[in-house]
Length: 419
Image (cartoon, rainbow, N blue to C red; front, side, top):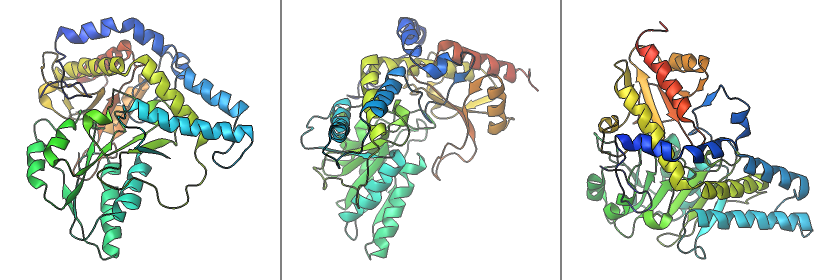
């Protein structure tokens, strides 16, 4: 398993000195970006290390929101006066901006629907859309060790269909034990002529693994619909729906530096009917759409390839340090921990446990040192981890000094300094 270029599935290895070289090469770029986040510049002694839960917002996004709310705030698709028509145009522009950001090869035939976030989007895909075209005896394959949002909705769809007298089978997506990737060989053997959909995750929210979803299409063949949970990839790294050959992609805006309460379902609509949420759509989240459009533009200008390189290098710096501390266990692939590793790195997400200190207690200790991390079960579905862990997640604004401060605290903890 090697580090992949996440749009084509090929790439190079980040190992040894390359970690420090990457961080040095991007030092000035990072410093310029970090200065654009008011919440961080206002709290210089606090390290925000929970970007997988929600990302901080750059000044450009805040300015776009302020400008909209103080100049043209109105409802969309309902009025003919200038503020309303301008708002409608902005919402429509956001949908087109999303297609551009995802490298949509045929934007004229795809659709984008704004939703409150990934969880709501996946539930709409499962219960509003999938249930409309599955028939008795069909099968779907879904992950049960990923986020709850990419497991529960498919079971809900099965229950809805059962109440209509339509029985479908939900199979568990297989994983490789050592790497934590999806087992594409085992998956290929599961596919039958009744397999209609496979749901996958782009980047695992606990293990930080890029799940190599470019292999999924080859495993399932040309006819099966692939639905991608991209909550931890959009806004963090380059994402190409063409390169991944998926049919549906769902993501949250707040994890991509937009405001909370907005996300999107992108759908190609060639292997299955075009996606459309059920019921009357109601008023769109107009300010959320404005913030999302501004956030995607900011991310593209910052350079998603550089954001990806930066966060992967920070994660590698942290796992290498944890690898040398006896009191800690890093979750996920064990072959990728050391700086000398030549296998795929984590995507800026590192989860770990202490052998004797409870994850929640460890989270409080880190908070006392100005390190804001998540410490719980991370909303993982039933086949995931049984015990809680500390998750460190980074973004373009995360500083090397913040990771080094975390390493210093964990090293002292490993030596018994805080017992």
